[in-house]
Image 1 (tube, rainbow, N blue to C red):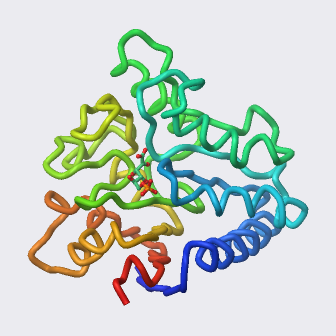
Image 2 (cartoon, protein in one colour):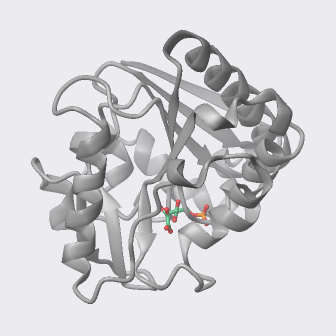
Length: 240
Ligand code: 6PG
């Protein structure tokens, strides 16, 4: 695994750099392998990146060869303003020529959410094998207490070894979530953390502090087995 930290002045500069990088990564991978799998995160940080990918970089990306997945979802209808799928739809998916069948939202319309997680697990298994590389790129954010996707401190999801998607209740609102787990995320070729704003200072210092592990700071559990880990951070998040 390679680990790199890239520093930027603010969210705009950071998002510009990620968008330019992602456009090249998708184009290169598609010309070599014919397709690209991208995992989107929720939260507000990726909104600027999404808009850039859907406007400035729209024509530079072979969208018809891209498959889109989600790192986590709040268990609310896809029309609810808290839905990660709705955020992605409004900020990116509505802007790009991506075939509908290539977008894989996490289902939230099943009466038993554990069944919805099983269904997403099954959907992932149709596209990825049991071993070796999974996604080409996973984009993630980090929360104040060190959570990422919906992997929160002390959650049983952190020690999941078998299932790739699980239903869990988390301290944040909305409490009911489905999240991907380490076993599938860590097989990605690239994992990019996007971190912006002064409210992320504590989270970043936990990541750098060896007294915290993946139980107390779940973002520390993201270490791609054979890929690259890049932290894209802005000066407010670093505190300098
Ligand atoms: C979610 C997320 C979550 C998010 C972080 C950072 O559904 O809430 O996927 O892990 O990425 O909480 O969120 P912000 O970008 O809003 O700070």
